Length: 214
Image (cartoon, rainbow, N blue to C red; front, side, top):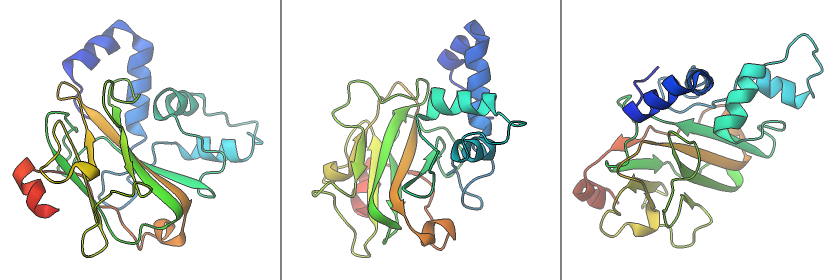
């Protein structure tokens, strides 16, 4: 489990229920979705199976997993994989927490395996809600102004300031707080599940290097 910020530790010490949910949530990031990756579906298999069968197996009821999923991940998993799929990360490639005062780059390879569209949203790591007082929370393949690289991939940036020339691909973060990212895939296709398409980890980058990578 990664080291939490002092503020989050203080909240957890004040409320043991919060500490329990936080620990349960973080444990859901193992195993990773792609081998050696920081991306994961933060939902326990028992929750997915239970939702999909309306908890037909009366001997299994994953109360802890459901509590963490609906308190923190805010996702519905009843038909997971049919109409939508979710991947989340709260760490960069080096395994460090995503900090709002740094600049990060996420390269989405070409041909994201979706029939409809994809989006990446930044959430406050402590509250798991949208980051407050930001002009926007996400970027999506539905954004017509999104810049695409020559190879068809897309670089998204997360940080307190937009790298020069990359505002269309930038999601603002609060420099005082940590954050986490959710990739939503609507109409997911086979390449996601057989992992012939693989999502790289988020990498920290300097703003000037971000400019050159665009």
